[in-house]
Length: 99
Image 1 (tube, helix red, strand yellow):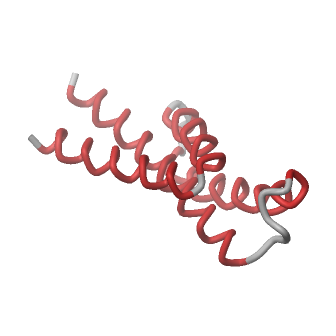
Image 2 (image 1 turned 135 degrees about the horizontal axis):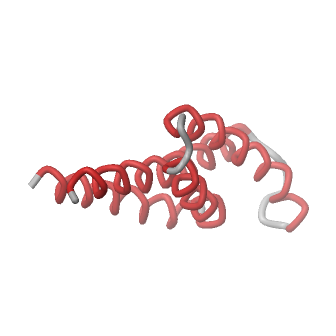
């Protein structure tokens, strides 16, 4: 029962992050999947999320998604990436423990 509840929370967090900022959320899914196979995934996720959110701040004005980099957009992007990355990482880990 604990796995199902955790899975529902992870699914809701992922969907919410995708609705808020879908490009960085999809990159967060890739980061979370990759960090599952790394030895220090719990350290890679926050550091990688900050790097991806920062990179998004400089790429978004180039592609016309925002006018300029801002701290508010960085924070939203960070939580979008970190939310999806950590939810997929924890779901994969719990799925492995369950099997």
